[in-house]
Length: 231
Image 1 (cartoon, rainbow, N blue to C red):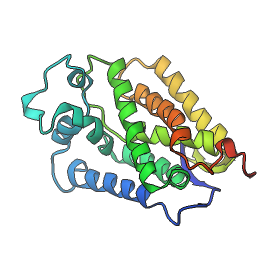
Image 2 (spheres, helix red, strand yellow):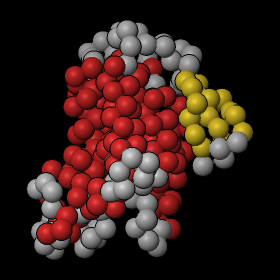
Image 3 (cartoon, rainbow, N blue to C red):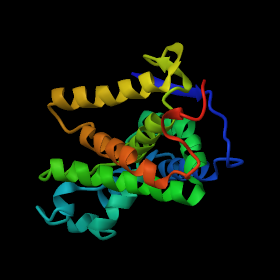
């Protein structure tokens, strides 16, 4: 639907978004080495070994012994560092780059990292609970990134964001409309979905976790809803 390009929201507290950049680097490195097919031809095995399979997590089905490199519960962490293709990877990393730096600024480096991982865990668990018999692996940073979207919505709704609407038309509009529209699209897509190809439940679980956790993780001097500034 759209791709974020840039926001008008300079850092205030931290000097640079080290954790955000590191997460992007790790995701891209893992994809290049294990999933792109350019280095090691092990993409399917990586997905099955390290993707999160709801039926296995909830003990509805036994794990396939061919793909049990780590205990099933650990895949709630590893799944968020895998991606299904270049577009899946690049769109998630674009959202993380544009919006993650300001959330890292609002929380501090360490708390931001914990926040990101908790949102990914919440997204994975939500998806597992709502698709209990699913035996295809869930992969992608979308759930954790959805948590960042939730945080941005309640911290910086007034900030103007440049996006590529329909991946072609550059538009500058407030974050509340960009990200609120994204959230609404997830709900509509979930209601209309007939397949499990896109993990809408994971997106909504991560979004909810981000909204709930942000007041607990932000620095005390950071105001909600941009109450301390205008744009």
